[in-house]
Image 1 (tube, rainbow, N blue to C red):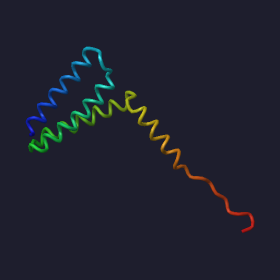
Image 2: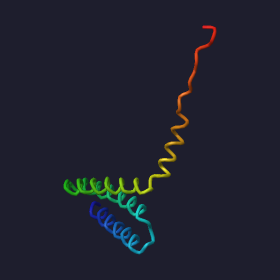
Image 3: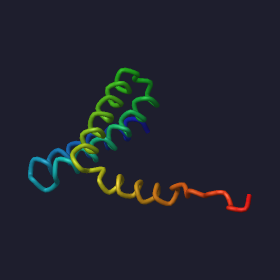
Image 4: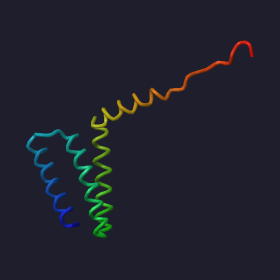
Length: 99
């Protein structure tokens, strides 16, 4: 099972890199996909007991996620979070005048 997961991860990672080199996907899209794939690699490595690979996968996933977020990939997510936050704005209430 672990071998299958890691072979699939390697194939998908190669595909993302080839699509990036061919100009079919943008840099920010590639960073997002690589971040997700490295999370999968970390899970597969953890199941296999390869702790060094888990650390490397976590570091690369964090770096690619940060790169995706700062290159504009997180703009829709930021917009969505801001619209949800607007619903939770406090309403200023004053005490009744007769009190």
